[in-house]
Image 1 (cartoon, rainbow, N blue to C red):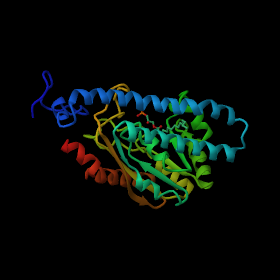
Image 2 (image 1 turned 90 degrees about the horizontal axis):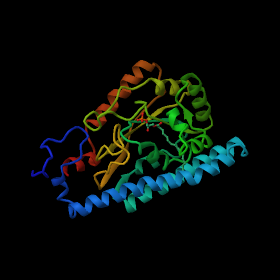
Image 3 (image 1 turned 180 degrees about the horizontal axis):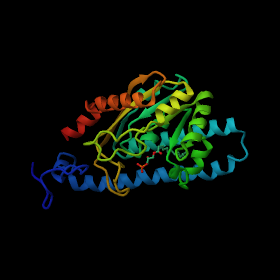
Image 4 (image 1 turned 180 degrees about the vertical axis):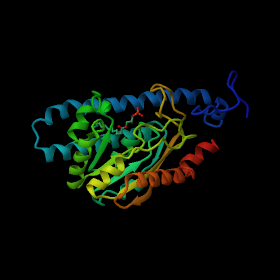
Length: 283
Ligand SMILES: CCCCCCCCCCCCCCCC(=O)OC[C@@H](O)COP(=O)(O)O
């Protein structure tokens, strides 16, 4: 494997494939220019979509009755993020296999627990589910791009666990599907490290609401927008991601035992990479 001058032989954790690997992709310089353009296009289209909805959400939130506001807020996020995913697919050489998420749509209230390799995770999942409520980082709720839309959709902040458990229970009782990332933050060192330690919030919420936990296994071909990935750093394209159904656990009885089982399940699934991962290894 020949490498460009100044690039080390071994690939550091999270580092992109050496320039030479891109030689297999269409003319490498043109391709890396395209990767930059695609990145700017992708991030700016997300910003435009969120900034278009934010003033509307700010205006509607205080006036609409809660059930209508909640429904509209979640529809807007599903459709807004679906548009974003379509832009990534058509203009930014991204390949997403999200078809298995669709099978959950009419299956009623449940906790949907996924591993968290990238900032794109919640966007991909909520782009397929009409009644999804995210258990989200409080800081993100205070972010001008996301805050108004998240409040309108009655997303739940993660900074007060006791009240959050009650709010999640109420949303689940009304038929919602709660999306949660048991790692609490993006996976450090993905893909070499497949999973961070898990918090017990998933077990607490599911047991209190009396609902099952459906796991989702998310795999990316590169750690794009992963932990520590600079926002303006170009991705290695094509970017492939597959989200597949993992095990569905019954209502947790013991938070500690359940969390250990959940951890073991994610690790066994992530240690047997599916195609999405395989393609990157071959590249
Ligand atoms: C119509 C368009 C949509 C309008 C905007 C709606 C905003 C919805 C916000 C959805 C974000 C849900 C995120 C849930 C999970 C979460 O909170 O993840 C945090 C991590 O990722 C980042 O944390 P970290 O890795 O610790 O930096």
